[in-house]
Image (tube, rainbow, N blue to C red; front, side, top):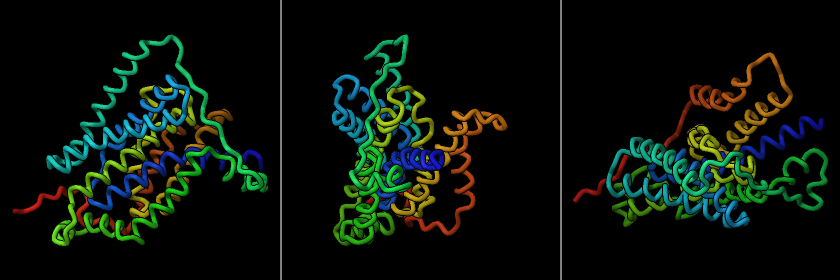
Length: 306
């Protein structure tokens, strides 16, 4: 039983950054913007978050730095795609490649080439009194870190805003019928730009999670495609935050299984299989997913006619 509880705890723990990234992506894609720079946003957040904590010793500074880094990358993406009408996929790919080199270069410029990895103390978990003592459920749900708690609140807040408020109607209108939204007096480009910025801020925090909450260190490979998994979760969840949460937990379980298998030295499958398990899962689920209800103008730039 202890092994099962530990496994599910780890699944919830590892799903947190995927949920953060997916919620940000859902908000942006509801307006018609595919934030294909998400991998670069995650990486910049990991880079900024680690440096912030390492240099100041403050986790608050680390997450704020990560959010600002993600925001900066997203605003670059938004500027080129929303206001300069560049291709969303091409620009996202280019910016991700740019951030890969940027983070590697400036990490070396700041710290040189350390002989041993630079480390920080991972963010501690917070046990909620009384609730954390509930058998089975307590150690899983109520013994997480503050970012996990805030993330689950964010899921329900985002779902409420998107589907139950006038702001959500504005976001969805820009993705479904931007021409009609424009006629109604909505500044479509402004809405799209700031929704991309929100996705960037959340993605930056998500990237920092891997350094600050999990590994306690930074490396150029720390994200390793997890931004793309968050991107895929947005599709799998049919652009709904709560559905995205369920798929993120499923990926968290696959991540946790991989870690468990490697630490338990299960020999009938190679270690590389467990490393690839989350990515295999995203391919299989994407192929099997039917009846996608994507925004009608997703990935299409809006150019206002004179």
